[in-house]
Length: 239
Image 1 (cartoon, rainbow, N blue to C red):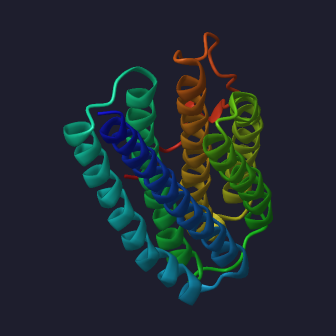
Image 2 (spheres, one colour):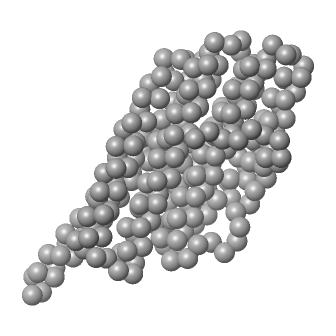
């Protein structure tokens, strides 16, 4: 009987490790996809942007594997307490990572259009914003794999910086459009790009809160800091 129990525990541990590996692979692809989307934007590289658009299918496929794997674990292992929290958290994080991939794809689609317009200065500001968000994605994935709630909390705090950059960039783009009507088309696309980057930062923060829940069993008590004032007039994100 003990041997059977040990076998069941060992097999469940293998399932959990496989789940972590899937999340790590999915997160790594999303991080790379986002980095390439920003690189394509800055370099005005339409060919790279097209590759980013196509790469989203790989992330979707892994999410489906996560779904199937978690359903199997719930049905066959019937995890409880901490183990159940691990499985549910992984399922939620996979869904968030998939959304990050979608927003990166949207950035790439906008980049294809932007390459057909004259260059505008704010692209460099967007690159800085993108670098901050990419760092958040990298850090929060490490926090998940290490079960490090403090590292996850660092990501939550950095979301305020992204919001501030987004507000500043929004105002900068409006100024460009008012001063030079020829820049309106490119700046309009950049407004959507900036909003997508800001939303990716929000999703990285969502993952951080899931990691906190995974470690402590509760969500953070305080509201995440926000400093985005563009929502009063800015266009919405894309699906």
